[in-house]
Length: 384
Image 1 (tube, helix red, strand yellow):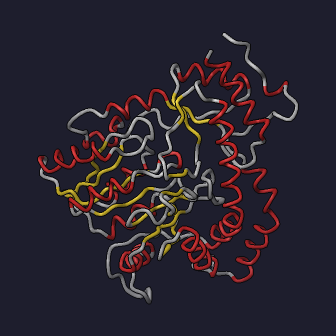
Image 2 (cartoon, helix red, strand yellow):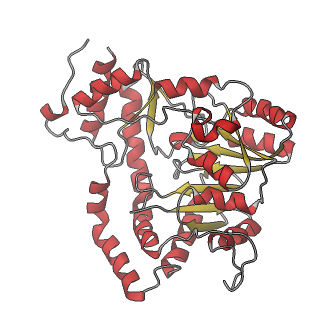
């Protein structure tokens, strides 16, 4: 095996952070503090002017007609699913290789999650396998109602192909864009690729707050109206009477203030993420299988993920070298206890294989070229 380099021994390299929120905060702290002070001054901690300002800004940035800020990325899926009034007889198709929030949202909203396999190169929902699962769902007595694709690690799913399936079957198309804000497909940004998109502002996301938060993007005025009502306990426009079942899905004014300042630098940070990804693409070529990004699609680079044999051993060697890594995800959803009653009729081999081989490397806008190059060097030593 090759001698492992050590980050601590390389000038200008150590330490390497998996996600660096400290450097980002140093860049915008004065402006964030001013935003928080403004909330303290006006005292509208819920539904302050920052909420509408953020919704307007984000809708414009992604090309959506409507943006509805909410309390978490999970609620950004639950709320529009509740608007569809799902029942246990309604099948909602989700990939099995993703974070559990996607399937949780379906169950919480009253539907039945049906797990779909992924494409082995993009990690995103396979439209061909989706067709198979639709047939299986019908045989099981379910009504195909909704597809909720996931833009895993930042790469938008194949929305043209998924939309064709949805239109043929009379289904809605949702996007779980929790990891893909800033991604694009065919000249359109995440947030405008599906009928409705939910995204997350968890602190570790490419656009993250200093606490939980999320947003729903939609082109439908009716959906937007329903989401605004549901996030405020299902009340009417005057918030005087409950007209439907809802929940407390509001975003705080403090989080909106933080996000406004982070959104102001987001697109500059996105280009920095792409710079880091370019170094990885070149430096890791031939060493690992990087996530595929189809023609006409660009990633938001929420994560940079590769597939590698003997993953855990490689990860241990990288840790010894001072390179932090993460595994998203070790267990596909259909293998989790919570979803045992939703077991698929046939296996999901690509989900199973990905769970054994994926490894995410440091990815944030404040990685220097030298640090990214060191990661590649350490990776090369770890796999040889």
